Length: 556
Ligand code: PEP
Ligand code: MG
Image (cartoon, rainbow, N blue to C red):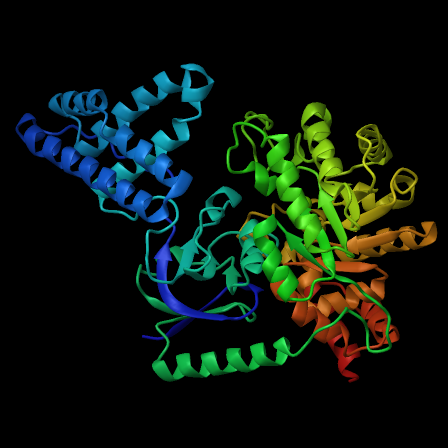
């Protein structure tokens, strides 16, 4: 029976396909005792599950080839380790179920590895993955992590961490739906980067059965469960028409009366460049360098590896502007070797620039790698720090950049309300500002961006957020410096018009949003943008602000 679920649409377009759920990360089987006579049967079940998981890992390795094959084969060997299997059998003989025996035997082996020096400790995550696979198979639940599927699918998850999403095959994921996560969560950001439709904060997402056909409308936030074939055809037709209209848009961003608004792309690394170029991005407004660090959260990537990735991004825009953000670790992007494990409130803890100032060697290496990467290139390199709270932060960052001999503009992200309120003082130390509206909303409203239930407060149309943006933009104008937006607010076409009216000087977003924003801006004059901005700021809620701007722009 067709029904409609409603969440928050965060990445435009329509995806129609079968649901595949992201498996839960940790499965702890109940510690129930089994009768002794069941032990041989349970031992056989455990053995069969281990063999099936090992065979699956080897098969996936053959498919993947290269470095991934070596990793998957090593995992298959771990699964079949004779001592580990002997321990599983012993545990079952004294009353454990197959799944509990596997779980406990792996836990004991894990503790051994974790204490056995850096190299083996680094293998703990691989061992956990093998354990989770065997336990999932025994429990008959979906495999943990990214679904194993050869067919394209719509990914359903509670939420997606950047580390999970790094493993997704973009050719198979038609769209995302998550139960948690607000409009600024990493699921939303990733969906936009991949150019696939997405809906977040959808209550009941985990109850939609595996294999069900759904239609996800990333603009309205509607998810149709089991839509009729007629409905599917209609949605496909509308999506194709919209896409064709947008594909016709090109050129630099500007209002209808020629006020320039550079449209830049947010990228996580070289893999995002083709989409950025195709969308006609005029440069990169936010290079989230932490994605280079997520492959192995136990240590930083080497300076050479960093130089290589930075150079590829810098070369893609020979005459353009590329704004690189130094590592933003912590909170929802923890790194084992940098992020304290025991913070009561990681989002309010040592993260972003704070982490780098505590680990100056990591910052130095990154800045040195950037200095090497930009050598001989005509690109306009700008480097900025995340989570700048005050003038001292900005000064410390600018000094580190100067010490590294970096020939670039240095800037500060405005993600903390204190930085927006005292933007002029921060601009005494740096040359530009970039508004990270995702975190700015999180901190202004004390609303965790990971929590779907708080989506109302993370709505970038909130007038208080618009006020903070206006403060920063006015300060930059008074200092004769630039102030862009690189948070997700920039990717909402109507809000982009309002941001232009508030005085920001560039807009950076996931590449897929650029044509939508370009088309919206080209419809209005700067004076209309300003009137829409004024009307939105005068409202008392996000909804009213949106409606007020719409009303001004439609000339009602
Ligand atoms: C932001 O906070 O708005 C931002 C651009 O940074 P991130 O989303 O990576 O935290
Ligand atoms: Mg941020």
